[in-house]
Length: 307
Image (cartoon, rainbow, N blue to C red):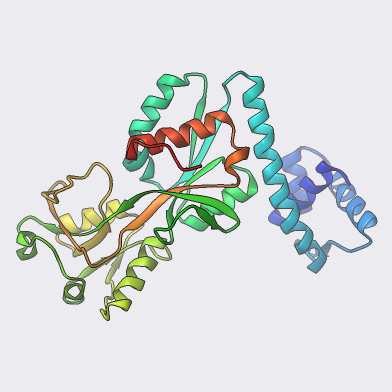
């Protein structure tokens, strides 16, 4: 059993096609099949079920796929870290996050990091949901994931990844400055039931947390419009298409005096939303990846991450 055998097997499980794997690897389908057959002979088990339109893993194949994909991701991360060391501080830092997170959370850090590490490249991979960020980490495609964390908790794990909250975002009601609610100093959570809300992204942690909080307060709140990100929710609120309950992002005026043509009214009854880093293993990160993670934390809090 070789690492190449496992890589080919994992690729076959994920693509469902031996021919597709052969095209990606620029080799013959027969060569791909030989990698899989070698694994099956050594283990004495059938790993892939051949079907008219491709392949699917058997029960044994699913067990091996879970273990192998996790292990290969860790090996790829370690190899990138070693390559960075060999290049004397060069290399690439790969980050996955939502579409607007770089602008809201990392703009200052990117500038400071590039001035300190001009030889290091930064790659940003946009994902639509936290689970996709975790999947990218698990596969070894990226080094760091900036995520919305399910609860404002201490350092812990989720989806088998280490996660570290960095900042907590208070909830605000975004309304136009000419809206009757704009003059309020704060909004009670119970009052949200009487407004026309703009829904946060479907299946996002922020939406799930908001709905949990409102349910716990006995408030029923059903969105009539859904958006792909927090910025779009603000835009629709500014266009008078509803009210937006969103986390107050860094860079917005802290006293709630406004964001463009909007007034941001605090909702103190709602616990803040935590955001921060998720990684496979902090200790396995390359020096440049850790330096970028620290740069983001410093730009937002002025303190390095715990650990």
